[in-house]
Image 1 (cartoon, one colour):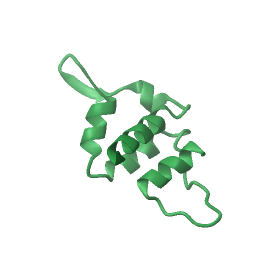
Image 2 (tube, rainbow, N blue to C red):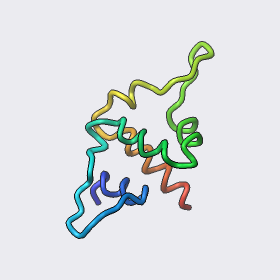
Image 3 (spheres, one colour):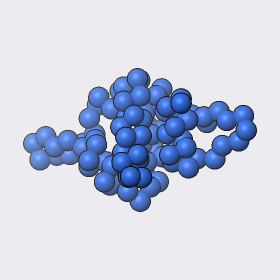
Image 4 (tube, one colour):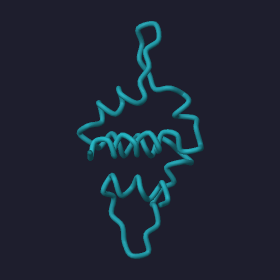
Length: 85
């Protein structure tokens, strides 16, 4: 299955018969962040998967923000599947 479609289905985004993902979650990882922030379990995802601490400050790794291979989308898929089980 197309990973963009899988992510959209796990999020419960609407689909139709001729399903086309409304956004490409690979090209711009901010789309992944926007969708995940809508979820009640957003803090758990953020702290578990993305947050790093450096000198007492927290942030999201640039590896996720600058990636164009689907790294953040794939982490979100893993997280959503774990939450379902």
